[in-house]
Image 1 (cartoon, rainbow, N blue to C red):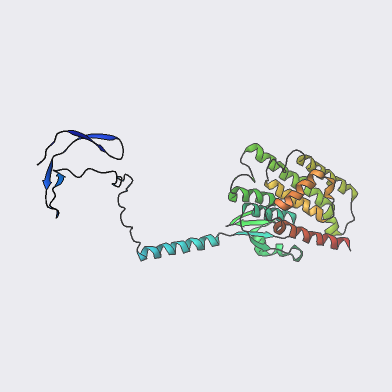
Image 2: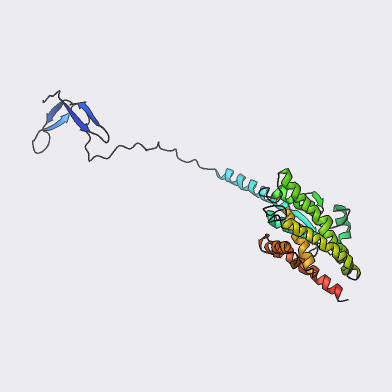
Length: 304
């Protein structure tokens, strides 16, 4: 037996540690007969060739639990019922494509990304006077929206409703009181000034065979100059970003253009309108198709 009480240093994977030298005893059990030193009550000292100790080993995770077939079946039935319920919650939209106010709503739906269940009404055939529709809307006018039983009339009210309920954010119809007020003002300007003066000039021509009225044309020209002034101050109709006001005004301006109104006379309007044609979501489908239909009606009225 060899004993020693001297100290020696052992190099671990880190700082040098000074440890007492353990007691050893000699074994001669190997085939060579040579004695081997083995520490008594002490595991072998690590060498630099040993694998470093692992400190990042996580405890073994329990085996995943299995889901019973009955639970999976119940979940699938629940998913099916929810899917059917969502399908039933449709948004019905009664409209006629030539109508500028109807196209306001179509543009708003595209902008917020909501699908409408389109229900076309032929006003010339009196389909808006059908008892079923009058029951929904006693005013029997278009556009009319029915969102899961909630009935709403007036295009600009419908636009702000869709933006408020289904918009991903408030950019189309701001929550800020002052910004929203500007959007509302532009919507009212469109309804009470621009589109109204357009209608006063062109509706008698299209639907009544009246001659072109120069005095009414001057009033429409004034309204376009007002709009040109607004657009001379901001990039979009109500500020620095697109809002529902742009959608409504774009529908009105495109309808005037379809009746050969020269939009190029108003530089700010022309620049903005060109951008609307390429920027508004679904512009061609939601607006231009209907504007072309209205143009056909105007051309037909002029040829009589």
